[in-house]
Length: 331
Length: 244
Image (cartoon, rainbow over all chains, first blue to last red; front, top):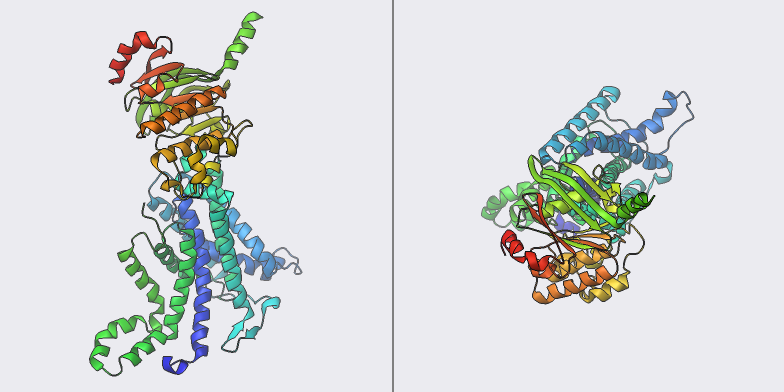
C-alpha cells in the first residue's frame, strides 16, 4: 500500500495529523463565526485578532504578568489560561458589541465587516507595537509533553489533546444549540429576532452574550494554539482568511456545517500536503505521456506546494454548484 | 369617595387603553392617533381595508414598529417607553399575520418556545386537547405543517404562557372553512376562560358573532366604533367602509 502510494506511512499520517489539527482550529473558529453571523448578521473580521489575543493572554499570564505586577512567583499556568483568556477576550467582545456593533444591525453587512476589520487592524497594530513581530515561544504544559507511539506513527500528547479539546468544545456547542431549550432561543432568534422578542425574550442581551461566546471560542482556540504555533500578532490574520473560506464552503450560519467542513478541509489540506494524490496521478498516467500532459494542470493543484490553495479551489467549486454552501439553506 | 372607587374600578376593568397612538416605519407615518379601549374578558376586532393600519396597531402595541408616540396602558401601566420583551412580559400573547413558525424548530419546540410570563396559562395537555393535530405532528419541523396546522401552532404557543391579552392578526386568512370553524370554537372557549382578545380580521362573518365591539380603522385612525348590539343597524355603513 505504502509502496503503491510512493510515500512512507509516517509521512502520510504525519501530514494527516497536521491536517486534523489545522482542521480542529478551522472548526472551532468557523463555529464562532457561524454563530455570530447567524444571530448578529455581522461578519466578524475581528475573529482572527481575538484568537491572537487569546494566545497572547496565555503567554503574558505565563511569562510576563508576575514581572509586571512585581511578584515573580505569580504565574497563570496553561490550564488557568484556557479558562481566563476566553473570559477576558469574551468580555472585550461584549464591550465592542455594547458600544459599537449594536449600532450597525440595521445597516448592510458591509458596515459590520468594515468595523470589525478596523478593530482587528487596531488590535494587531497594538500588539505589534508592544511585542514585536517575531514569534514568542510558549512551552507545552508539563502534563502534556511527550507522546505515544501508535505503531504507524508517533503522536505527541499535546496535539492529541488539541484535537480532543477543540472537537469536544465544538460538540458541546452544537449540542446546546441544536438540542436544548437555550439553543431553541438561539435558533429562533437567528430566524426572526423581532418575533422572539415579542414573546418576552430579552433578545438584545442574547445577542450580546452570543457575540461574547463566539469571541471566547476564538480565544480558547488561541490558547490551544499557543504551544503549537508561535505566538505573534499576525497569527490570527494568517488563519482567518482560510477560516472565512471554510465558513463559506460550509454555509453561512450553519452550525454543524462549520464544524464538519472545518475538520474536513483541514484533512484535505493534509492529504494534499503529503503529496499522495500527486504521486497517485503520476503512477496512473506513467504509461501514457499524452494523458499525463493533459492532466498536468490538475496535478499541479495536488502538489504539496499547492496545499495552501486547495481550500480556495474547493470554495470556488462549491460556490459554483451550491451557492449557499454545503450545509447552508438558501434564504 | 364614590368617584375614587369608580375610577379604580374603571382602570381595573380596562386591560388595554390606547390613546392618540402614532407610529412610524422609518420615515412613513402609518398610525395617526389611534384610540381604543379593551376591557378585561372582552373580544374586540379591528376591521378595515388592507393598509388601513390594523396590523400596525398590533405591532405598535408591542413596540415592533419604528418610532411611536402617544400612550399605551396595559393594566394601567404605561408601556410606550418599554422595550418589546418587557411589554410582552406584562401579559401579551402575539400571533402575527405571517404566523411566524420557526423553520429550524420542531412543532413541539415552537410550542414550548415562548417563556411562561404569568401563572394561569393552559397546560400542554389542554393545548393538545384543543389542537389534536399538533400532538400528532409534535416532532415534525414547524414548516412541514399545513397552513391550518401552522395557524393552530401559532395560536397554541401563546396560550401556554399565561398571557391574558391575545393579539391575533388575520388568523383565518387563507384557511379552509372547516379550520375557520375550529378557530371560531377556540376563540369562544378562550373567551369563556377569561382571555381578552384583540382580533384583526378581514373575514367579517367570522368576527361579527365573536366580538363585543368593532373598531373600524381607516387611514391610521379609528373611523367608527360599532358595538355588538348596533351591528344590525350599522351593517350597511360597515359594508360600505369595508368594501365587502
